[in-house]
Length: 175
Image (cartoon, rainbow, N blue to C red; front, side):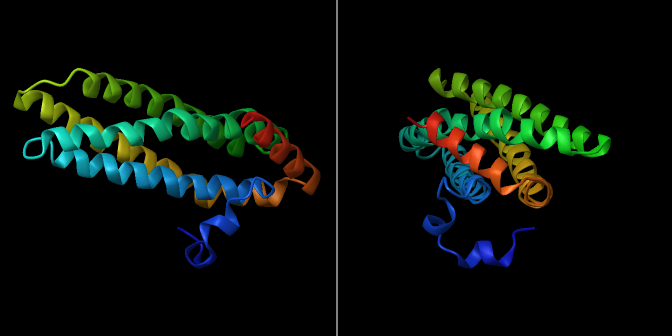
């Protein structure tokens, strides 16, 4: 569930790298926007083929840059600081998130391969649509879990010093 303040606080105020947890949440919203684009594009592959294929490119460009940074922020900065502070079940949850990242990456690479080699047949269109649907559903469930559960863990367990270290690593990753 998205917290009410996330709906009414402008993204630009929430997404500063000085506030890494807010930045990760804002990035989730940007990923969801790209999922929306891919879903709409997949639905138009038969009647607006060239435009639909073209719509995937900016979504892919975002996921190949900011999306990769986002995953690195979590797996290289956030998760390693949380893990020692967590109980066994919480660490299992974290391992599940890492598995989700791997699975999302696998589906995403498959989708990029399909879009890079378009075909004219209905089977290809159905495969793209099905993969976009699975990828989008997977990502949306994952994001919802991180927004609710991971944010709660991080907000409750991480010290201001740990958050400052995460922020510094996130900034360095973007240079």
